Amino acid sequence: MNTKPLTPEEVTEAADIFFPIYECVKKRMSDDAKVEDILKVTENVCALAQKLRVQKEAEAQPFGFNKKQGDSAND
Image 1 (cartoon, rainbow, N blue to C red):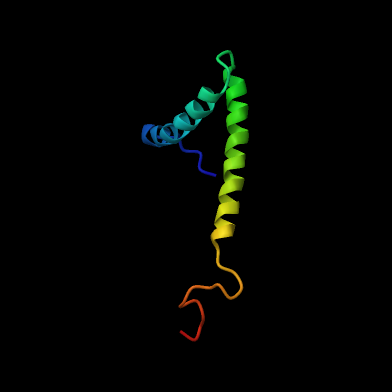
Image 2: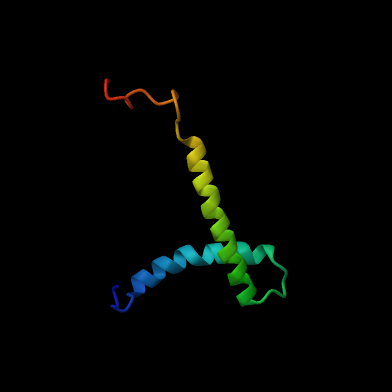
């Protein structure tokens, strides 16, 4: 495991990803929601988003005889 301190650039990159997601969840919650509650909901929403991504990717995959041309070894 890498134990070197994070660089400001690495933290900035992570914050650029995290905060829009956090704000998206925060907007949908009540005004009196605590940060801890928002973080818990954000974790669950992200887990659901990952699950939905996997489902969409699986649905988009060809199966059986519905393969694209060039997928067989004879092409």
